[in-house]
Length: 427
View 1 (cartoon, rainbow, N blue to C red):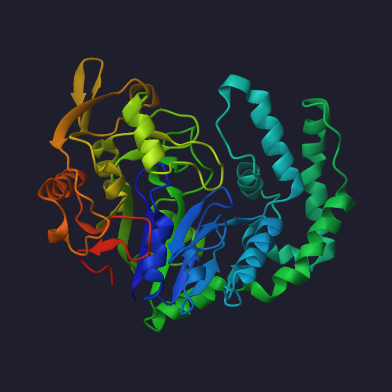
View 2: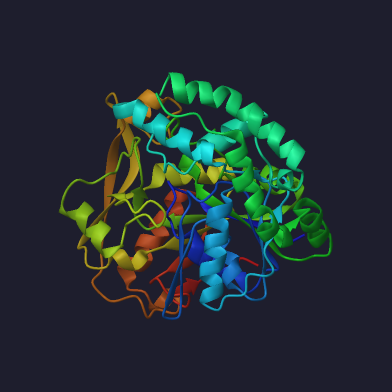
């Protein structure tokens, strides 16, 4: 049962799209198991760049079946827009499957997300305003709308009424907004039903049958480990579980079927949105990382906060995900630095701490403890093997591997599909 989980080992934006696409030609199914269109994946194929937000990256691999699992929240308008954009560029999207149990992001979820974030002011979380959090909240509160509900108008109407009973009270009395009409929402959602219907399937059954037939299934996380609702830097997190355990609940497969867990690490560290970030740089180095690395959010359009590599969070990601391998991306961005600092521990209240503190307060006050490694100036984008890398680049990779607690099995040396050094096969 060759099932692999591929996920971000930092705060997201590590290059999961490239890693998934690299494996896409060798796997039978690529499954998104959590998140929504708040995730952004950039995949470069030849001279073509694709920005994906909701669709699995495997949709760009003709031999692979892309799947949106039950743990994902789906905005139908975004889904259809992405499909249309890919079709116009000649990408075959006909194999896509969507779980009938995935939850729908409704117009009122988007409204609630935006007005709530504005209301919080300085205390805002930094959400994308796309309705992701409110949709997951509806799911937990058992007033959510699922994909399958689009095909029973009576049930859909009842569920929208139940959800808006409370939300309209909040919108009108707390936020001074206009109430949302039930029939207007129902009409809009029903308008998507026939367009989506060809893709809707019992994905849990299909994926388990595929694994029983020894098909290769890759489970793709939407965000990074430190954004996990349970194991991330709460409350500055997403509303689902990007960690490896989320693949089981978000796709409907048992943990004994997972054979390998691959963490994507950027050769430095970035973060989008609010929240603590010990190695964040506010100087010329931070600006250089942002400029050279093209660090702007694919989905949000916001500049990413940049900092040096943090081995503490890498070790944490190894532990909570049970990582078997790392894929190190964007090593080429560090070319040109004479010395490269790496955070090996934190200082908290005058004490050295080598593991991620469980206390939010401690993590907020953590100061990075750095070790400095010699850099390199040679162009590494044409490197095809580990031995092609400059000696200092090799030593940097080896040091990160030792500090992080799992082998680095692949290295990204450029944005292109073929600009990757594969040290150990993931399959």
